[in-house]
Length: 133
Length: 264
Image 1 (cartoon, each protein chain N blue to C red):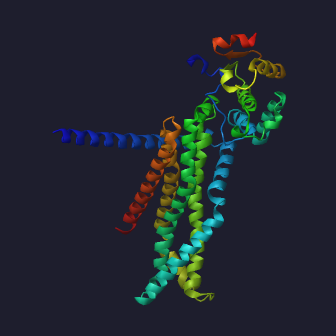
Image 2: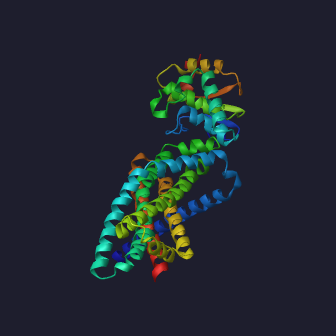
Image 3: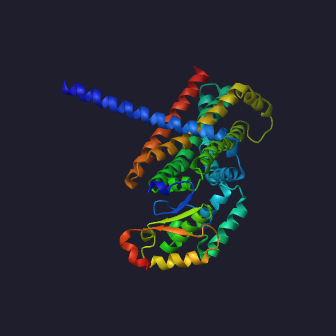
């Protein structure tokens, strides 16, 4: 697991929650705001555009406790994607998307997304392999 | 012999506990100061967050605070004037009011109000962030919690203690004047002379430093307590309890030190 936590990898993990008192948009906008030093309006616009691209524009103003598992996952995914790191690792998706057939959901999100990284890596338990076939 | 061993063991454990706590608080404080000194910290995003914190800490409670200052000041001024009249020291009443209310009671009560309202909230929030891994998530995204979460709260806390104390002080002076001289302007000269005598440069600097320390105490101690919380949800109330006790002890210590330096 330690190898996942490097600076080249953006993680979507049950162990990396959203900031609970911020909306989905604000959680995502923190990265362009603090890392790339965009102003608040531009950072917010980028976050909104990413959520729209993933098909989850409607969750922009929702906070973590108000989201369902799919919405929460989409917000976490958008936060990881906006980091623009070479690797994207989705760790234990079943722990985050416990109420849907998540391989199909993940493929749907990947098909909508047009930026980098093009390849997403999923780390799941071996006994869940049949779900992906 | 066993009693002695137990006593030594307990005392040692307490001493180690106090040492660890003090070291943790000082380490946190030094990190705060080094972040404050870094020019990269002072970007637009940090300043925006500080402004938000000042709004949450001071502006949102302004009306309640002013009513609270008005009530306390009115009671203390009335008691002081009545007692001063009884013992024949009415001429010294203005100075007594300024010294007791403006220099000592108001800054202390302001810090106490902010500690109860914002300090406890900060302690709970930081403890929950620690327990829920939110701080780790921020670090993973290279958004430093010190810059985004902690520093704005500390700067906001200090600015709020200073700002509210100044506002409360002005209101108290106004009330004191009305209580002593009524609506007449005849006492203005004597009143302003007393103010300028009491508020020497040294006293003003001392008051400012005391407010800064009060602001630091009501923000950094709850944060440090929150950060010490083990990753267990049931430990959050314990963390708040410890943090608020430390804040209270620190506020009393700062007040006693300031009185000692001023009068002894």
